[in-house]
Image 1 (cartoon, rainbow, N blue to C red):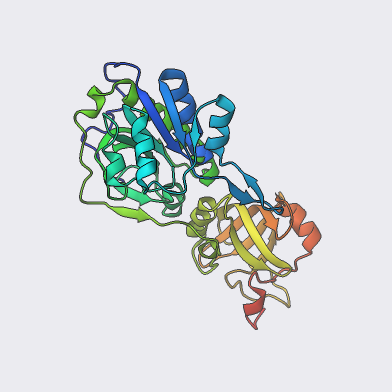
Image 2 (image 1 turned 135 degrees about the vertical axis):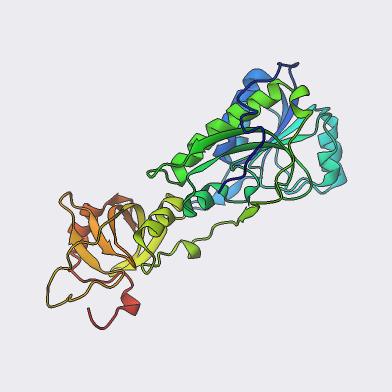
Length: 345
C-alpha cells in the first residue's frame, strides 16, 4: 500500500509562478541531472554541490560523479566537500545568498544549521510516495516488494531521514516489465517535472506543506550484492520482482555449474511437464528444465518456474540465455547451486 495524500495531485496544478529563484543545487548521481538541467534553464543556479570524485573501474581511475561532470561542462561553480559539518563549509554555503537549496540524491546529510540557511528552506526530491520507502534505495525496494505504484515526493527537508512535509507529488505505475533501470529513468524525469513546478511557484508553493502520515512508514535499506542472491525456493512471481529490482545493478545472481551467473531478465511461467530422464525424476527448485521454443532457459522455482531470457556469466558481458546455453551445454536436471546440489538429481 502506498501513502495517501489529501492533496495527491497538488503538483499537477501549477501554483502561480513566482520570481526566478537563486538556487544551490545538491546532487551526485545521474538521477539528479534532469532536475539540475531543468533548473539551469529556468532559474539561477549559483552553485552545485556534489560528492567528491571516486575511483572506479579495473584501473581504479578517479572519475567525477555525474552531477559534478555535468556542472563542470556547463560552467557552473562546483564544490565537492567530503562532508558538510565544518563551520567553513557552512559559511561558504551561506555566502551564496540562496533562496533555496534543492537536493536530489546528494548522499550527504545536511545538518540543522545548513537546513536553516536558505531563505525558503531546503527542498528535496525523493523517489517514492512518502512515507513509504524513506531512505537509500526506494526504487529497488518498491519493485522488490511488488508495489503497483510509486512516484516522486517533493518535501521540505527536516533533520529526520526523509521526514519533512510534502509540497508536491508525481505518481507512476510500476508495470510488469519495469526494472530498476527503467523506473530510475522515468522517476528522474518526474523529479525534474515535480520540483520544477514547486520551485516555479515558490515561495507560495511552499506555504502549506502537508505533514507525512504516521501510518505506512517503511524504510528502503541500502542494497547489497549479498542480498541479491536468488533463493530458488521462492515462488516464481516473487523472484520476478527480485530480479527486476536488482537489474542492472548489482544483478540478481546464483551459482551455475561454471560459476556465478547474473540473471538480468526473466518472467514467471507455469511449471512445464518434468522431463522424464535418468537424471531427473522430480523438479526441485533451482533445476534446469530445458528451453522454451524461443530458446529461453526454464528454471524450476518453489512455485511455478522462471523463463530466463538474459544473463551475464562472471567475467563476461550480458547475453541472451539462448547464447549462454549454447556455450554452457547445461544438461536437463543441472542445479544452479552446484555446491549444494541435491543427491537425487
